[in-house]
Length: 257
Ligand SMILES: Nc1ncnc2c1ncn2[C@@H]1O[C@H](COP(=O)(O)OP(=O)(O)OP(=O)(O)O)[C@@H](O)[C@H]1O
Image (cartoon, rainbow, N blue to C red):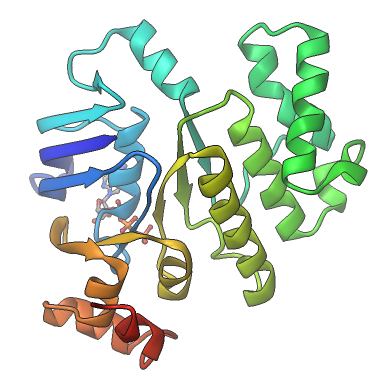
């Protein structure tokens, strides 16, 4: 479980600081897919990066699978990072390593034996359906294939949580859907909790169980996907939906009891 309690974060600036997050309360339950939406600059990336300690916060309390981010030591933080995979819009693969080498990288860092690494790499290639590309360099892969490699690499250390930063935003709609289906499968079959941020409401609407809406650093609304996207309470959320591809999608309303 990821538990944000009254989290605030200000970046220093010449004009007295940019308030990126203001008193954010949020619970992401174990094994759910939670999506955070909001306009550019709303604070989505900041919120995501707090979860694995890539960013720090000023006020509040954040616990991730029982680890308190404010009080934990370096050892706890290392363990938390092993337990938390992350994927990005632009994949961030190591260009000089082949697909197998990219997936092996986190395992090499954690000192696993060669035989264990080989076995795990093959297992992960099977999950992301990319066995035949093991000995290819990232440069010769399509965007969707690169994202599959990034997903396999993120899963190498058997994380319980996967953070997705605009994971499908650079992909065409069909490839994006295939990646979303893969994320859904990972959530369902491996029980991995997924926290995703996206400006594509269609991506969030497709796979998330619950959704939160950030506006200027404030979490203004959160609830089930059907509630938030089908029956938004806030004008800001309504405007986001009306300007998106999901506007008018009946399935969001039908599913509300
Ligand atoms: N390292 C930084 N230093 C100063 N200000 C920052 C820094 N990172 C983010 N900000 C500011 O914090 C606010 C929130 O940024 P953040 O990147 O979290 O938003 P976002 O919703 O992810 O935006 P986008 O969708 O454009 O990536 C913005 O006003 C941004 O300019």
